[in-house]
Image: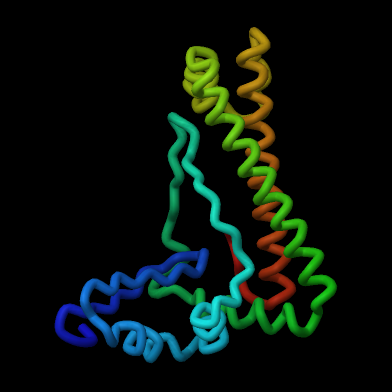
Length: 186
């Protein structure tokens, strides 16, 4: 507890998320920032609005679940990972920009495929449910065998596209970790 009704908890997250619920604590930002001094450049970027992000509304398609796991044991090493990645970005700007661009493209492809799956779930509900229910019991190499009609084939192709995009994301995140000297395993 930092102050009356202000509790700091450390929860691991591989995405580097900082969540603060302010309620009626006017000095909460100062107290939280003081706790985050091990990542001053990141905090400075947040406070000054120097973030390279986009905000888009998104939800997973029906019948899909996002599973997260605790990376390693103990607390999160996200602040030191972020620092190492930022250091690598400064030391090799061309390679880091190229890797970041490819990672962004893979993220965009995943978003496109998941949005398309959501659309298919609305427009072709029976085919979508049938494919999801049959494919969740199979290895991805066997999914295409479930394409007994065009509607099901569209769902399977979108699932395979999402899988490829996720593999691309993992690959480029791993490259980022290797270049920065930190173990990033998405």
